[in-house]
Amino acid sequence: MPAVLMILIGLIALVYGWVGAGHFTGAWDQGVATFAVIMAILEYVNYYHRQLQHFDHGPDFKRLLSGKGLRASQMAKDLKTYRRT
Image (tube, rainbow, N blue to C red; front, side, top):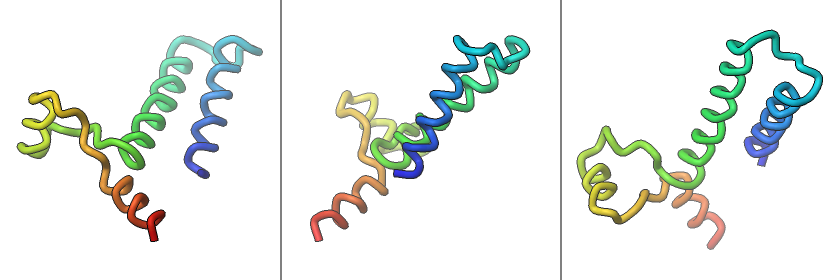
């Protein structure tokens, strides 16, 4: 839950900076902030839900190419087991 909260705060700050008071001083600042928030969202999904990285392990890459979808992350499996007990 703290990770989701921090991502939401970052996303709100990003949107506020883009459309609100104009705290960004240029395109570089906007780009870096946008990149950081996108990476935080992707890392959250990768860690807690689905494994997004498929190029470093042969069987995972073959699974992706075969159309079977993304494999559940190890943390997602562990949390599912924990919640059942």
